[in-house]
Every structure is written in C-alpha cells, then in structure tokens.
Length: 242
Image: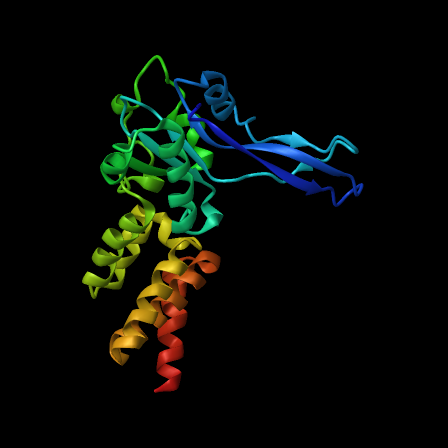
C-alpha cells in the first residue's frame, strides 16, 4: 500500500456552476513520488482549473511530506493565514493515515522527535536543493520569518516566543521580539492567546486574563499600523480611561 495519499473533493464552480471532482494530495512520500515533490517545488501541485470555464479552483489544503531517513522526517506545510497551520485533529488524522498505509507502528514513536512545520509558500526555497542535498543539510535558520522555529511545530514555537514576549516589561524589547518573530503579527497568534485567555478565566486569574486581552488587542492592531503605533494607541486609551 503506497504511503502517498490523495483525497477526492467535489467542487462546484462559482463562475460557471459546473460540478467536478478533483484530486488533492495530502501526503507525499518523497521516495515514492519524486514527481510530486517537483510539483511542490514549482508550486503546481494544487493548481487546478475548472474544466468548464478554465477559472482556477481555490484548492490549497495542508500537506504532509514524508522523508524516510532524512530530517525532518515529517514536514508539515500550510498557508500562514490558516492560523496555527494544521488544526490538531487534522494533524493526527493525516499522520494516522501515513502510519496505516506504511504498516509501521514505530512511526508513532518518531512523530514528536522528527517533525517540523513550515509555511507552504516557503516550500519551494526549502526544497530547492532536494534531492541532490538532503534536508538535514539545509540551513533552517536562513529564513527570518521562522528563524526560531527550527524543528518545532508552530504551537511550540509560539509558546517559546511568547514566554520571552511576556517575560520582559520593556515595550522596546517586546517590539524587537515581534521583529524577530513576525508570526506574532499574523492570525496565527489568535488561537494561542485565546487558549491562554480561556485557561486564566477558568482559574479566576483576572490580572493575567486582562494582560492576555490587552496584548491580543495590541498584536491584532499592530498588523494594520505597526507595533509601535499600536502600543501608543493602547497607552493613550488607557490614559483616557484613567
């Protein structure tokens, strides 16, 4: 049974109304499907057009790439606007599909130690030298947007960065952290902060709850006006309330 896995999706074109079934790849075993890896590299894997009118089909699912014997062995990819990349249940569902197809239950033991998450739009650059150069030799710190995300799933990355962010009372230092970790100024931060908000609410910790809410407001506003201006606006509003 092949490890690479695709699903069929029913699609109704908004432009011409034609119904069609499209194949979308969710798991690619690099050794099995080198042709599909090439499509990932040239960004044509999920580019399909409606057979009725030729309009592009908005198909852009998350993807799991499997590199047996290389590192990272399991490379997850999704678009930045998908929040934390994969919803946790989808990660597990796709990974379970790989375990079942491979027949190798030991993959479950390797899961947490051999995985990485990247932005889908970064894949062409990150795979540009593959297979001539193994992934383990790739300089994963070469991309500032995920500089601190080496070999981490995105939730672990946010936990690490936000620990530094909340650990300093200095606004200038917080701004430097957002510059080094621009993922904080994307919708990816919202589910993480909302989870912290819910936890503090259940604990009855009103002080930390308010801190989380304040910074959710600042980081959300910073996407539009920049971090410095967002902090100024927040401080001005606090002065008016006081």
